[in-house]
Amino acid sequence: MTAPTTNAANSSAFSLPVYRAADLCVTHGANLGDTLTFADEIEPNDIYTLSDTAAPVRLGLNAATDDTLTVAANTETGSPGAPVRIDCCLTLMSPGGQTTELLVLAQHGPRNDAETIHALPLAALSPRTDYTVVRIDTTGLRAKLAEIACVSFARGTHITLASGAQIPIEDLDVGDRVLTRDDGVQPIRWIGQNTVRAVGEYAPIVIAAGALNNSRDLVISPEHRLFIYQRDDALGAGRAEVLVRARYLVNGSSVTRRDGGFVDYFQLLFDAHHIIYAEGIAAETLLLSPQTRPALPEDLSHQMAGALPGHEGRAHLTFEVGETLLSHPDTADILRRASTR
Image (cartoon, rainbow, N blue to C red; front, top):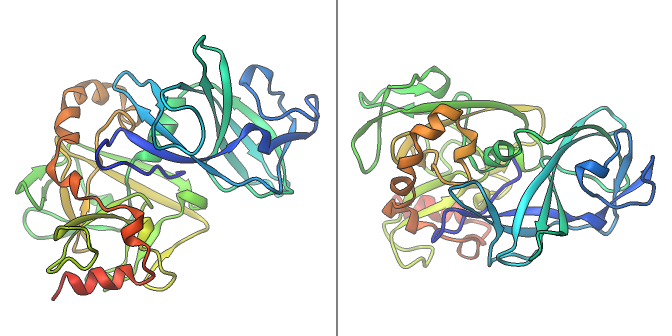
């Protein structure tokens, strides 16, 4: 899941690491010499190669309740306000037989003509590697983008129930009553599950036992936010309560990225966005928003449409701190000590 970065003030805005169309060029096949283009012009079995000088840039997107996408103000590429559509999903195969999916995003101009094409790989791409187009898919594209934004717990994560019992997430059922930090006991509305290759942005973050006073290793998706109460404002956030994205805590020792193999991810949805307890750590549940709603089953998505304002209007969402305040190499240790003093 190539990771979005949500703006605390607007949870429907997110940022994605993309390549420009010119970074991917056909080196063998019918479209030899052409750069990445639209589904109608892409040929199966063409081979694309990523430029040696290519570097991902951040594309900021706003998602609306009608599923439309526009370029956000906080973007490194694209024109703010311009509409964006997901043109297709390409399945690319490396010489070693590994497959990688890539979303082709098209930004449109004032006359609805495509101005700019961006490539969003769902796993890491390597330069000087031949990637053969083995599939061109134009269906289910919005759901694929939504899955990227869904925060997830890995199989085996223990969730605290109303009784105080800690149950592995895979053993939970819809309707089970879970202890929340601010709203007492709440029933689970939906449990999602998907298995992905644990590579690139899909690779989970492992918070080792004790790193944040957690009882066991906590394994979560990179964009998952943890709720931490500091007894003193060690981060300089101007408040004691903070929401911190797991990816910003990686330090190579007590908080690491587990890259390789596969990971089973689970999503917990409630009627509102909550802070629950996973391995003893206060962590968020799935935030229903215009960017995540397409990942739900269609019938549930319609049922939950009215919950969108309630999910996004939660007071604790304003507690999120950005990367700048978390750039210290010992951030996890600073937060652990600040929460226990």
